[in-house]
Amino acid sequence: MDYQAMLAWALPIGVGLAAIGSGLGLGRAVGQAMEAMGRQPEAAGKIQTAMIIGAALIEALTIYALVVFFILQGRIGG
Amino acid sequence: MMGMGLEFIWRSLRTTGLVLLVWFAFASYYFGWVPAVSAFVGGVWGMLNLMFITQLVRVALRPEGADVRRTIGFALIKFPLLYGAGAALLLTAVFDPLWLVGGSTAPLVILVLKAAGRLVSESLTSEAKAVA
Image (cartoon, rainbow over all chains, first blue to last red):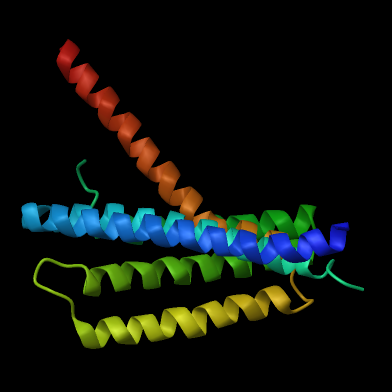
């Protein structure tokens, strides 16, 4: 298998793995945040802030994978 | 942590705006217009993304239950429109993709640095109180 074919396989698999990982992480974070809010509704503001920071960081990692995909896809084929 | 409510996010966004303006002036002089504009546009996109994440979490994840209409509204703006704009920015040949991504990371870097600074200052204050 040559470099081009390996890249063509690796890019979508990499983006897919990044999406699965961030989906699992975000789902777990939201679940834990909802549980924490249910236990301590008075701390909802602080929990939401932590949730937003976590969600933004998790989302950014998938965006990086997507950007790498866009940058490297030009090297496939040709 | 004291003062870590939603206003922390808005303060971080304001700081990001200031940092992006300073960065734009610095980068346009030292690196040229394309990296400066790319990083600035990426930073504005990152700020908008963080604003929509904040609004989504605020209306969807709250103790009194989700505000369904506003959640759908923010999700419809964030996912097709903002992400579409991000993809369009990446695919146009005008901007440098690496500087765009670097700029879009700016709000996250500032959030983490502000939170870390707050943690350090609070631990130093509590240590000083314990010694006194």
